[in-house]
Length: 430
Image (cartoon, rainbow, N blue to C red; front, side, top):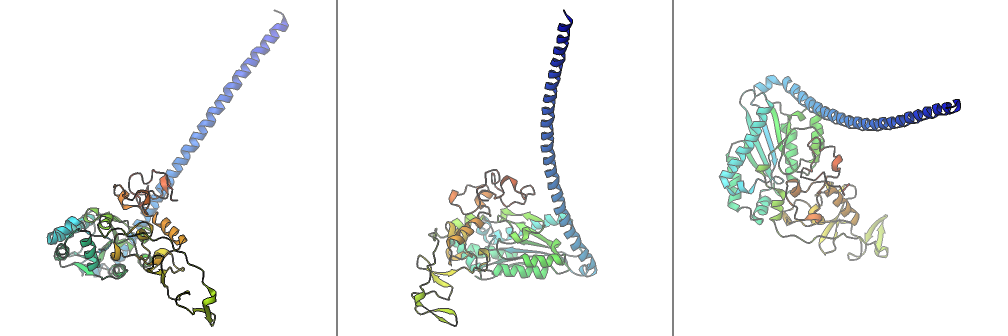
């Protein structure tokens, strides 16, 4: 073999080795890039997990600080507390949380059993919390309700007789001299006003150790809670949860809670047992005023004819000929007095005259759209309790959490949408 051929062979071997090395380098770089991508993804997951844990820790720290602040306030009044019977108080919105039909049907005995079950639940919570008690404990329960309205609802749904209902309330109040059934009458906000005043008064008592509250989902409690928070008294408050989720005002604060669903009736059981469905009102359109029939006095429009003018009275006629009222545009729908009934305007409300929400507002298409979007933010109680919703796609309430699988409150166990698949399904309501 000539020297030229030897030289060529050496160059060929060198080039082959370089190509092999280059291929190995490219493959190695590709593997490393894939690994870097995997590690970056894993790091992002761990960062998110750390952020979630940190957030939970912060919330728990705030809750602990609230409890400590309240405890310090009570310690400062310790000499006074020791001379008084410590108070454990409970307030219940009896219109929004109706005791189970099985208890009511038992009359006096059912009332006593319900009172005993409620007492046992609260006593077990206090024992786990290791609340220090000086002297004799004084335990009070206040149930606020519209007695006549609630009785009419239950009788209309064939859930009990009048005698059973009256006997149940009697049995509940007879279970203890400190268990009170308080009739607030038919006022729309009667229960809310009573409970707000209850909180503002009794939470401030130095001898009050805990106040347990089972409220409704309506009303305005935010100002009261803010005041109690400024006075470092929120540590005394514990939420009771029936089938309804707590009022949104309470969810803004880190408050402990206890579930007592077995004692109370599913809201839909009561609704579906009432008077049959009513026709659903359609959106209304407000015609432009006929200016030729209007005169002015000092720049204010006043009608010449009652039949062809705009009235300054908020009462007007709806499409079906019934009297109605116009929404106050300065307030959101849920702040109207009373707020419009979601079920009446969006599907059908079976409560009729017994409904505590208004069926008389005249809503524009935009207002109906806002009402529908807001209703979807609250869960359907059928699905939340593992039942099939009889209304299906026509249900006005949310069947899916608006936040879907990204729900921040789900990992904390505090999301209202607790039913199966209420987070796994693709959300169409965002």
